[in-house]
Amino acid sequence: MSSEILLDHGREGRIGLGEAVLCQGKSVPQIEAILADGSDRGSALLLTRLEAATHGALDAGLRSRIDHDPVSRTGFFNHQPALERLGGVCIVTAGTSDVPVAREAERTLIFNGYEPEMIFDVGVAGLWRLTGRVGDIAGHRAVIAVAGMDAALPTVLAGLVPGLMIGVPTSTGYGAARGGETALMAMLASCAPGLVTVNIDNGYGAACAAIRAIRPLTGETVLPVD
Image 1: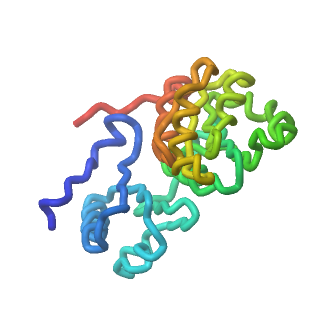
Image 2: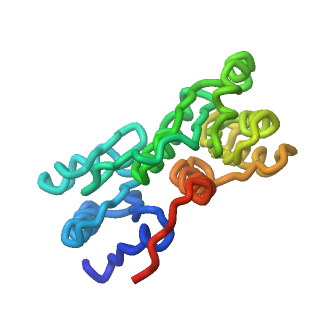
């Protein structure tokens, strides 16, 4: 089993982002071995795509050390975040169905010490909902816009606010939405200048991109590699 696992314990010191473990596709024994390795080294781990059933099947001793959130399907192992770097990022969703992906982004930010502002259900189908919050959104250095279906929200926001705009297409939508492919293509084809886009349902990737973007503005430094 050990030959299947090689954790990046130096990631935080090298790039300023904590080690993350994608649990989807891994067996319970594999996840337990990863957690045991993290425990032995005293490493904090962000667990992504950790389903409630998988979490419940883990060894009780290891499971008790995981702060698990079933909505975002994330877990914090061996870690109590210190939110000393407040502000800078706003996460906005087009609809309530986009919340799980937004929560994954939120939890990734919190794991790394950033507390984002959350704004839900302000999609363009009811544009008044969005226009009433533009002032709040505009005060952030980075904005993560989470949207499915036609994914118009990031384009509209990118034309209204100055911060880095990161679009997250979601798999929300009926037939022609094609599991998020339509939303992805809409964001990639956007006419709004400077809109960048991550993969479908990738709240984790969007949060990491936001951290990379705002960290130099905070005056933080990254520790050198040993």
